[in-house]
Image 1: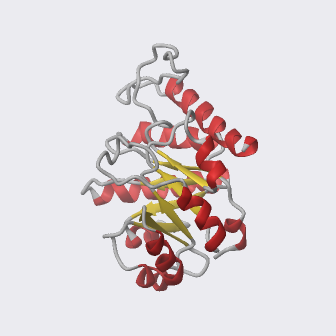
Image 2 (image 1 turned 90 degrees about the vertical axis):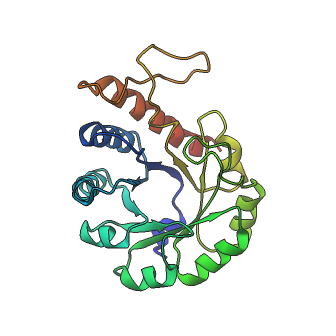
Length: 237
């Protein structure tokens, strides 16, 4: 595992499904401008040409901002767009085979859900980081099993690779996850929230305008601010 990744702490932004390309790129750049350390392309569409365009564009953005670009579930696409690495779920391919297919220095992430033994096996297979979740109820995967915060504490003590928390993480509930030992926070919904520009909700969450708007400036500004706020949590905890 690259030594720099051992020390990484910060926001791991994951792109939301269903966005047109223009707002997706604008909002991804806003997250990077706010300080996101990792950006993952998560696109479940069957449009290979779209996925390739987004991959190339997001890889270029990450290089510009000094972040790591990760492709979800698709080793071939990660190789084609010269991504920094790939993230595989439990049913998305063999980790050891992916490790062999990736160039030297590439990153390999593994979803381990709420299973510490799976994380141990992932590390043995060459994973550079492991992800536990869902930490909280997640609108992206509402049926996902919950991952107890004790997993992160154990991972910091027993694993030599960083651990990433995912699932329902918000600015309001992230601090205990960091305190438990999570080195990366993977966030989709609370970062790229599809709200309306109706100022600020009662819980303090900055609303953003709908994704189908032709003017992305309000949403991009809010996303950048939220990314910066997530990064500050790592400075404070």
